Amino acid sequence: MEDLIIGAVCMHAEPGQMDKNLATMARLTHAAAAEGADIICFPELSLTGYTLEQGAGRENSLSLATAESILTPVAGDEGVIMLAGIAEDTGKGKPFITQLVVGSEGLLGVHRKTHLGPPEKGRYQAADSLGAFSVHGTTIGIQLCYETHFPEISTTMALQGAELFFCPHASPRGSGEEKRESWLRHLPARAFDNGVFLVACNQVGETSEGFSFPGVALVIGPDGRLDAVFTGDSEKVLIASVKSRDLLAVRQNRMGYFLRHRRPSLYDHGPLELGGNGTRNNQER
Image 1 (cartoon, rainbow, N blue to C red):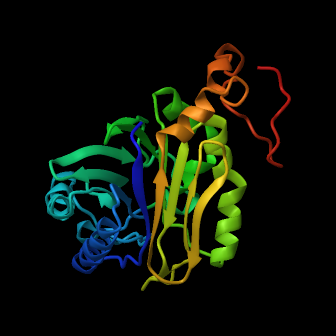
Image 2 (tube, rainbow, N blue to C red):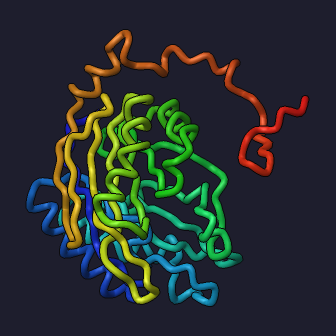
Image 3 (tube, rainbow, N blue to C red):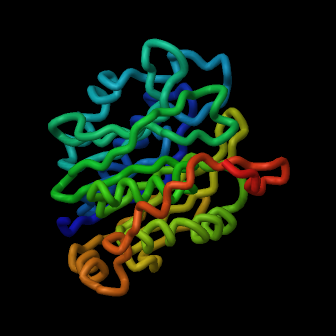
């Protein structure tokens, strides 16, 4: 991977106010670029806003092509790569929750959310594929909010070559301190178990639908240690460096890099069948 300066953004995104959200993203992109950022990660649904309203139609979603045309000039003007979130209008059925990777040359990658939070299932549809892709000489994987709770996603992306996970969130409820502590229970494990950097950020502020997002952004090293963190109620661009030497130090450690020692033949247990109390049934298969 290349040495990079990352900007992890906490921002307010109002549903249905894409022009205002885009102006906020352009302003924060300029601020991050002024601090030398190469890649700027915005929260989940940063451009279109987070909504669970069943009646919210196409005015709250964008086609991939339209989103690319809107975001490319912003990235190009600053010479950076942006990760931006939209509700993606597919032209049929419910929208995807999508994170675009956009540079001056246009669309570089797309991740569509595969594991929806239970409240999201009535409003959005889940995607069916996972992948990692190369950006700025670094292979990245994207996980959106609820997806980070499924370790298999991280392992799949790491096995596809990911060196850096971006984890944009639109995660309401609780204080910033509570959200930070919640993230620190599982996100360091995703980085440590797979020997990757991890960058996470959340929306911030209260929306017209009554969702209150605590501002949290953090960067975790491939050793699972917290490298940088922000917690607060205001918009923020957390700037942090990720260095190839730190990745190599973990991956060249005979005892500290685990993926090369996997035994996949032991891991396929089939679908989980839970009883009413949430425990696995003991019935023979």
